[in-house]
Length: 129
Length: 231
Image (cartoon, rainbow over all chains, first blue to last red; front, side, top):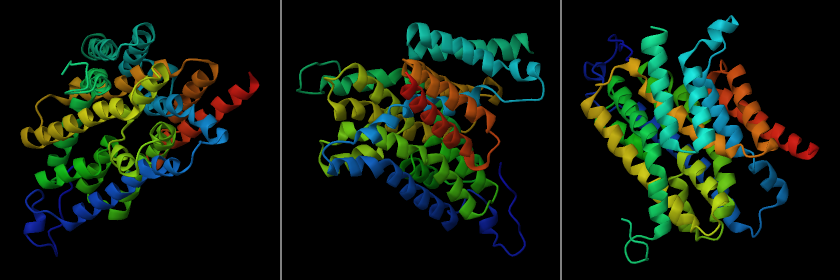
């Protein structure tokens, strides 16, 4: 992960990552921070100025939680590989299905995580090991 | 902590803290990894803390750290993190009607704390329990997440790696979202939105800049609306 700095033309200090704060890092932090906060504030700010949120905006918003959460979760549970077996024989997918069943039956976050992790370890360290 | 009258902590605030507690199982390893990754990429403690406080969005932090560590151009670092965080616009729009009654400064402060977990937990609770104080419940959950996130990123930077990667503790992150996703799919249109959103995100997972997330989410929302129109 740590790229070796190019010593040619760089000072000795900047070649020692971690010892000197570089302006590059702070520029990235501040710009990303401002953009992210403006995303968070966007509609929370706008909707405070209008009395009622129009129905044509409200309707699609109903589908934001399932659509975004699924788009966050699914790619972490499976990767499409050449061949059905290679795609399905994935401990993350098996753990995800088990955890999903627990979530569906119990709606309990703690139980979902526990079962998911145990099944992941079972398949990673025992079954597929 | 458990007092139910308003003298110390309002019960809706306590409910937010209580409901977010199990989610910490996903947050703690995530934040530790963010701290460890920052240290490994050569960020100073001040930079790692600055990133966690100013940006406060795990996936984008990890991406930015990774790219900074591999000396990617600044525009790529910023562009990637910004695209990853675009989903916050959708959360902002979705939760905004609940915050509309509050003063501008209150809304500005609540917006800073907006995260995947605080959003998903609060919107689900508002749906279930209309009597909840919107800001108190959200603040209880979101501020707890903030505090744990900051502490654990610092611990990650200082202590460094202890648990082997093979344990896959960060797998707790998608499991948390899965636990929030399943109850959000409560009828045909919302189920269709989730299934299609997830499937499309998997199919286009190779897209750069984590764009698959946005493409999947938009496809899911579209299918949810179509399904609603047909029933």
